[in-house]
Each structure stands twice: as structure tokens, then as C-alpha cells.
Image 1 (cartoon, one colour):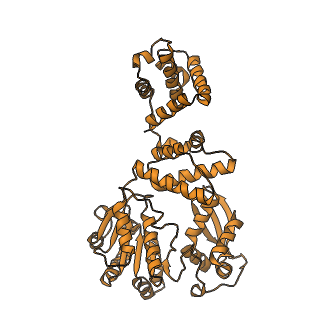
Image 2 (cartoon, rainbow, N blue to C red):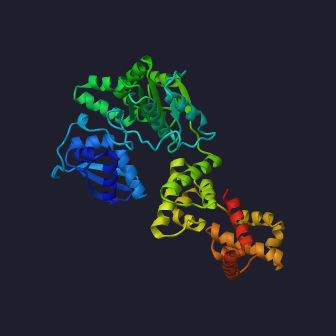
Image 3 (cartoon, helix red, strand yellow):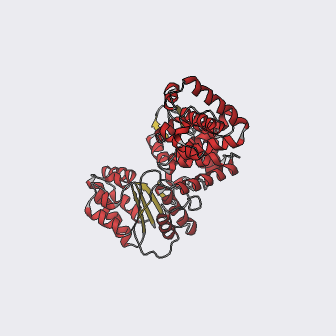
Length: 447
């Protein structure tokens, strides 16, 4: 996998950039969800961390879906693969990574564009405001403050703003930093007694974007510099975008004058995606997968994921990636049962607690029979088959034991439940109507 990733980086960045900067990276190990890489000097490690760390993480996640983090370390004993060059001498990378000359701080990810952002009611205001800001014309607000919990698209919109602004004006200077990186670089400038160059570098940009500003809470010296940087950017008519996990009014440990400045512009919240938006996001991602790797995902699986994974978009897309990647690895088609099995641990964390009582009520309503008949000793077909379906669903959707399920169905023996489960499994394979009934009831109980 590492050799494949190196080949991709070389193709994206060109031979010279790769030889000067990326060839010295050595693979150490994969530990859980973390990849460990090493470089021979702190200088190289810092530069790679600033300009290519996110791209490395994305490439590793593409080849190995469980990877979520890339950690760089320094091993001075490593042999340098090529002479070390100064950062300014490094040629521009290909379009997959924003060249360091045009983007101060972290690189912009071109995949995070406005075209790839799926719009719904929960994020429409944030999207429209971001698009307006990126078009480069006059705006009635500055700064733009985006807030929402993790994984809802704040960072995606920031990358999209920067990418669109540079597409319209290639000479535009863009600075994209996390609040943590802003703090680290400022403190490093303080230690080196070189704060003037730090100030000039950030305040000369056309667009400054600071991600996750809540991380400077309680950092007084960093907040002091941040406040003056905000003022300089806004006063000069430059554009400023800030994100946080809460609205300005709910941020704690941030100076009042900073909160006032942030609330002065447009505050746009991004709420949790509703079912319709989650469905659209998955359909968009599946369409992209079909074009790039030929993966197909049935509609019932897409609907199942949209109903089940409700926490955030990042986890939703991650679940889809995991299912598709595992299906390709084991050579199996993506089905609803395969998806349930692959995501068992994740689904347990999200699952709605379905009860036997609820199953019995839903089945009785679905088949238009009395609940008392479902639990009775009647053996007529119009009652017996729904009863078997209800037992089957109780076994599949609840953690209850066979004897307990039997007791809840009029005191029946556990062998009766076993027979019902086996019978419904057999019938589903050849009876499309019954299979559709079971699938429909499952959706009703999951919703």
C-alpha cells in the first residue's frame, strides 16, 4: 500500500517535488487506525506536516479504510534520499494538492468543492453564504462564521471557498489554518522573536480561514494576536471565515471583544442532516463510486444507512466506504444482510431499541389482524404466518432468547420459535411477496 501511495504522490506532485520532499518519508507501521511515518529531520517533518499531511491521510484511508490518522516522527539516523531544499524552492504541486506558494498554512483539498457539497435545509444558509463569499464580488458581511457539531461540513465549505476563490483569481493569497496551528505558529514566532513576519504573512492574504476557533479558549496571548489579525483583515477589506462547534454566544473562554467581532458578520449554523439530506448525500457518493471504481450499492442499503447513521455526515460516508471496501476485499456483493454484518459494531451504537411488544403491534397492524389473535392459539393461515413473521423479527431485531420470545407469544415453546425463524428464512428465498413484507416491516421498526 505504501508503494502505491508513493506512486500516486509522485504522479500528482511531479518528480522534482517528490524527490526533494516526499521520497525521504519512510513507512514505520500501521497501529490500529494510525499510520506511523518517519523523516530524517525536524525541518522536513514540519514541512510535510504543514503541506502534505492531510493528503497522506486521505490516500491511506483510500487504500486502507480503517486508517484515520497519520503520525510523523523524526529518526535522524535515516539516510536522506535526496538533498534538502528550501521551502520556497519547491515547485508547485499538481492540482491534487494546493501549491504551498498560493496557500499559507494547510493545503486545500480539491475534492472538497461546492460541486461535491450536497445542499439541504440544514446547511442551505451556510452554503449560500460560502458561495457568495467565494465569488469574489462585494459582500454585505465579514466575517462569515460557520458553526455546527463535528462532521457536518464546515471544513468542506472552507476548502470550497478557498478553492473557488483561487479558481476565479489564481493570484489570490489564501491562508487556511486550524486554530491550533495558528496558536502553534504564533508561539513559535514568539520563541524565535520573529512575530513581525508571522503577522505580515497572515495579514497580507486576500482570504483568511480559521477552523475550530474554540481551541484557543483560555489562550490569552494567542487570543490577543487573533483579535488584532481579525481587525487587520476586516479593516483592509479582506475576507475572513471562522468555524467553531458552537455559536459565538455559546463559546466559553473567548474574549468578549473577539466574540463581538465574530458575531458582527454573518453567523450561519449547520444543523444535523435530516433523512432526505442523508439519502441525497449517499446517492451522490454512490454515483461517484460507480464512476471511479465501478462499485454499485442497492437502493435498500442506501436507505438503510440513511435511516441508521444519523450522528453526522462524516460517519455516514465512512460507513458507506467501509461496506464497499470490505465487499471488494472479500469478493461479495453489497446486500442488506452483508451491510448489517459489516457494520454490526457501529449499528449497535446507533440502534433504536426495538421491543417484542412493538414488533407484535406493527405486525398486527401490517396484516390487519387483531393483536389478541396474533398471541392466541389459533392456527389458521391468516394468523399463523404473521405470527411466524413476528417471531422471526423478534429473533432478528432484539437480543431476547428463544424461550423468552416463546413466552411472549402466548407461552409457546422455544422450539416453536426456532421452527418459525427457520421457516421464514426458507420462504424468503423463494417467496418475493413475503420477503417484501419482512423488509417493509423491518424498515417500519427501524424508523
